[in-house]
Length: 274
Image 1 (tube, rainbow, N blue to C red):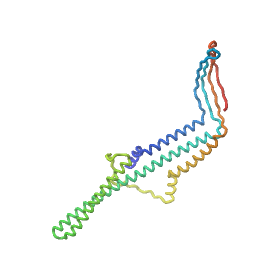
Image 2: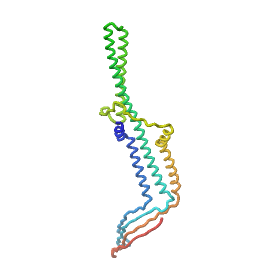
Image 3: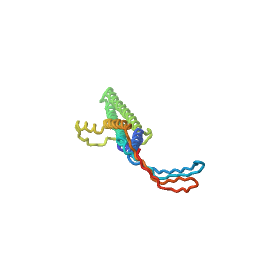
Image 4: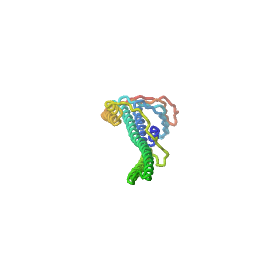
């Protein structure tokens, strides 16, 4: 069926795979922009040994270090919103690639079915022409037809054979194009149905057609989203030079002592703004 062919072809169509990777990349960027809004925490450990005034010393520090963006003039939120727009653009572009491929595959698929139907019709015409030629030859033998009339019937039969051969070539070419669109070799064992499936066309007026085209046309949606994307880009660029305030801190234990002193650890913490 066409749906099975479409599913198979989409899995092998390189532009579709590239568009899917772009969607994955946009999703990752949106996740990174979201993480920038939340606190960042990391484990910290340091161990230092050295000599000061000819005396060896040891110090270490371990604990949890954290940072939180408090005020960035709206830049982080604008970046996150822009990443969401970028993700939507990637999805729309993927949908566009799929739609274009589906349209191209549908043309090749139904063209193949049409050539098969034409071949069937031509085979029927050849059978009738040959039957009529035999009857004409028999009547000529009975001297009921002239030689010119028989030659005329024979010419029509030859014309029908030529049209059948043309139809057979059309089927071969249509099958090759269909297989190429699927990314398969000519030796692949893939066949299309012999006739069109019966479908009941849904009635639709011109205004409804315009509305659906505007609603589902990827180009219009992508251009609309790109306008918003560049608006966020302008806001982000303006906010980069503005004030920003970050909260940072540390909580843990630390110790420092010369070799002649005991290395006693104690609580170590700080909170500050920068």
